[in-house]
Amino acid sequence: MGRPERRTLTAAPKGLKTLMTEADTIEATASVTSLQTELTARLVEHRAERAHTLLASLRSLVPGTELDGPDGAPDAFDNAVLHHAFQQARLAARTRDADRARRAVRLWQNRAALRAEAVQTAVGPVMVLRAADCDAVDDDRLGSRMYLLGTSPEQDAAERARISQTLNEAVDAALAVGGEVLRSSTAVVIWTEAVPLGATCRSYTFDFLPSTVVLNWTDEPLRLGETLVHEATHSWLNESFDAEGVSFSDDGPRFHSPWKNEDRPVFGIVHAALAFANVIHYLSRIQPASDDDSHLAAVLRRRLEVELESLEVGHASALTCFDQVPSEPLRTYLRAAVADARRAG
Image (tube, rainbow, N blue to C red):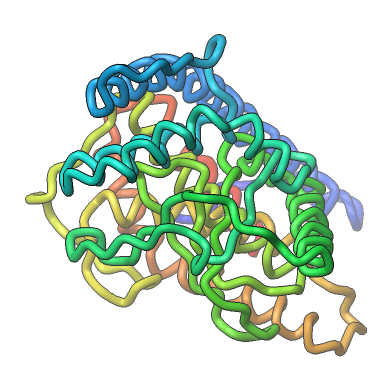
């Protein structure tokens, strides 16, 4: 599939073609935003049902416990805390660990206190914790180490202030260029190590821990913003799959992923294509001025170049995999988001 055609006029006056192309781009981006907003509303509605189910399961895993639920659908923060509590309770039941079971219950019961401790941002409260201060879980089936909320540690005031400032600047930068996905899907940030500007920022999410990201921390807000957009997209898409009743077979065909340089199933290609489309959308709008010769400017230019190249390589596979998404609204959004990202090039 080639690039979308753009309306032009024969023998148009100089500058008119550019103006009309920009107008088409703005219109297309607005359409993508509208589709995402509609799907996010459906996702949030589905959270109420999901919360009811999880609380019922939590009560069965920890009998005799009084657990109140949220009024209506939980926001991203409460939703994240509830899923951490549920995973803690599941581990407690599997290992017959009564102390972990009690901590799981307290985690949900004390969510208001956790909210007060969190960094207050434009997308709501966000817990930021070192991985070393969380409960680490190693499970070969996961592929990556899982970290769960446990007892909140004491934080150095200076470090907390630095982290809060960097996080807020990153969130504000993302929102300023349309990174609305952070509003619904960012609530817990667990960082494993700090990395310098220019280093690869490794990060991941789990589909059963929505709005939670494990990442390498960077004190450069624009780089942190990129990682938050990337992982919030994964979290958003996982919840959208659930809300839209979308599932994929592990036995289906595999397609080459330029993002991981390996063959991946439909699920992985769909995730990568949307996540990096949103990253391109973000990066293309924070590009530095042409005369900016700083190290940060060089990193941002290279990041956009790399992701545009990868999306072109993976574009055909992405479209084929989008066809396997049974939800028409979600399928339409995926195609529109990737088309919008390609126009950024």
